[in-house]
Image 1: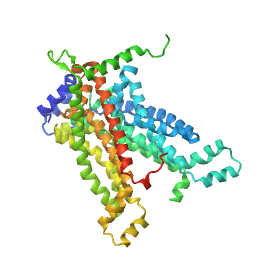
Image 2: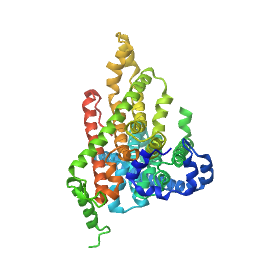
Image 3: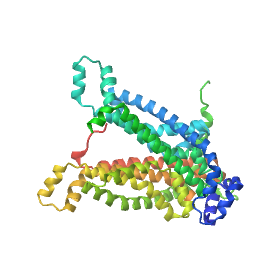
Image 4: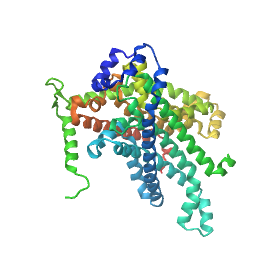
Length: 246
Length: 240
């Protein structure tokens, strides 16, 4: 299964990983052409519990921080148009820097660990959430705002009672994209020493162990789909009028 | 001096990394051979661009015709949009590791793995861009006797260029970013610096990260500029 060429190639990358291979993985490894070793998976599935919870924690904390910052920035920029170009460029730069590079750029400043991973992951979500919130707010018809003003609402009331509720579909759409992307990218947190499911792919000699790679990937994709579904359900529950309209 | 963060070691780290980019350093594992320096940095940047270019070419070749066709017919929304959403959920580390372990290492396999990440944004944006062209405009084109292919080429694509190009940009950045972990699939890239701390040292790792970030940002700004030039003047709107 593991070709000598791969072992050589990966050996260059990090020679230590293969020393840690636990003996129970060997019987499956020995079977050549084995794509997925069910016996091993059945016996070892519990070792994925902690990484899965770590992964979920990374994602949820990063999203919460990213959302808090991006949402506040949108509210600021909503009233002050001059803030929009610098915020778009600033969040765009954070979005464009590849996550792997971002982790290693932060290492000298914040050190290895979960915090570094969370900083990079939340920075990545800013642009997606910020841009969607701005689009949502911009899409609110002027006539609706005029009507609210005519009823005597203040700017603050219009924002919280009219504009934000009407912008919620776009805001949640942004949050969904950010969530799904973050679940996938959090796999790279292993490079920053941030734990998560990436450890079951890259660390501990798993890099050529297909069973572990597949289990980790399936959990990551399932987590993305479940969180996405929860956000969609939340949107449906909080905005019954949209469902009636469509 | 009561800074919450002691800046001196941070500045020293970045200084060391920048020195690594321009001047070769001695390494204790290569048997006296110097590592890093400008020549090797350029070589690895070009290597990363090369594998990204292959993957981009494959992505465009696959995704563009399908996306344009489906958009023109207004069919297959579920495939085009669903594919784009699914693409985001794929963990790139798992994908590269899976391809390398299941099929083997090498340029061809990595090109395919990277294209898996590059195809969805192009496909979705090509579809959406073409589909959202005003139907009355398309009817007018058909009315003056244009063939379906002419409609696509002369009406729909020019109007959809901003959206299509947004997809190409997103795809390029995703591919170049992921090409950083190309060494896991036995292909050279700037990831060599990042993933081989034992050879290149801390300076090399940080130098690799700086170069990857600069490479991605340069490409993003260049592509954004090209997009502006390609967009017909009437379509240039103020961005929110």
